[in-house]
Length: 552
Image (cartoon, rainbow, N blue to C red; front, side, top):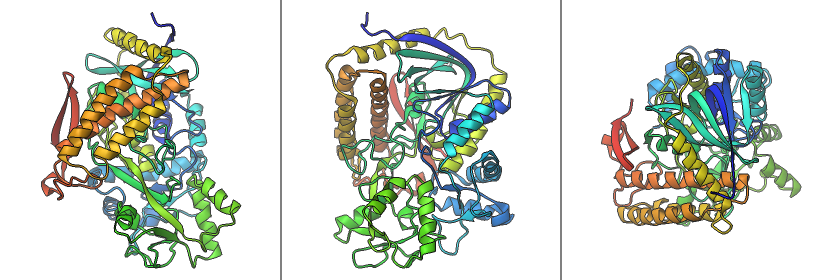
């Protein structure tokens, strides 16, 4: 018997929301409105957890009072923006149709969606094209949504990490979690479950390797939803299509669309064709569509590349800083102020940050997944960032509540052995007196991912890397040690990342072409026959099975 004992508790609810970001909280609010009992489980604290924890300043949406009545214009613009290629136009249209009311809801709840009394569209735009990203004052988005969820009757359980789904006869019936502070194992008995745990960060090295939390979005978003869904039999999609972000060098933060300057080379020449001077309405779209810009300039000897604000007026500079604050860039602004650095006089070097996968659980427009009773929203699969999280969280909450209303309480008979097995694993990790730390394991994983499945991929590299990862996965699983519940959480994050890393290698081997961030030097072209195809991977009888499917 393990020397470390976890107390087991059971929590019953109609709808369980895994993750307390905008997707999970909007799902909880809507499900509660429909009369469902709702629990939100967040491994941090919903007041400040996740990508939106410290703020956000852009909300993709369609506002008829601004854009006119023809939504198709905005559908087409969205399809060629940052979201290009991830979702088909019918999905985009549904999102935009629902975005208008979501903007009004957020404003009513206390998130200011207007700037100086008007809807302010700016940033991430092409000159001469309609602008589709609404500037809003989102620094306190999470506290407001948390308050609204509690007001509606949802129960929020902070510091709870959900690690596995529970299923009975091919239907989800709950989930298994740990308290990240107290020695508790929590069995959630639920009629429906909504996964909203965000992106899969920390799989690849960030802006400064070794500093695990210096990543552009929340470092506690480690693909938990994807990993547990896969283990429960849900197929995952397009894991190999890695994406990258950009911002100030060595200081990883989102917000490149809030910087209003021009990206220039060392000779002062703009690196893109869109703007030649600071533009508060569009910004410089170059790095949005040319993800490898900064790496390519470095490799070719033409770099560095700078964000140049020269010539910006005092009014525009104040305007830009306002939005950077709401995009959670307060640290870099404070640093520049403390050092007396004015970016209008000293251009800021930019770089590309790490890699992450926008692929994952390909949920439909109702938030449904292939597993009965299981829903997903937000960045479980890329869907228009925070605006998509809100809209599809709302729709997932609505449909999960309706499903739960017509469902009987699960028996949890088949899951008993699985719960005992997981409990044994957790207690074993907590009991080991000598073993690998989660930091060592995470850094080792990142090294293998970058060296063999990073910027350059080939069949031989992928085969060698997969061999290394599997050997490392086996060793880490047998030696990973935690001194307390908080470290146990990080250990479980690493185990999830190891699963996702293995699946990424397998999917990258199967995609024999170059597309986006997936660059195969042995297949340097993009295959047009795969333009409307999704590469899925599913666990069948213990084996990883890949399949190409036409995108619906």
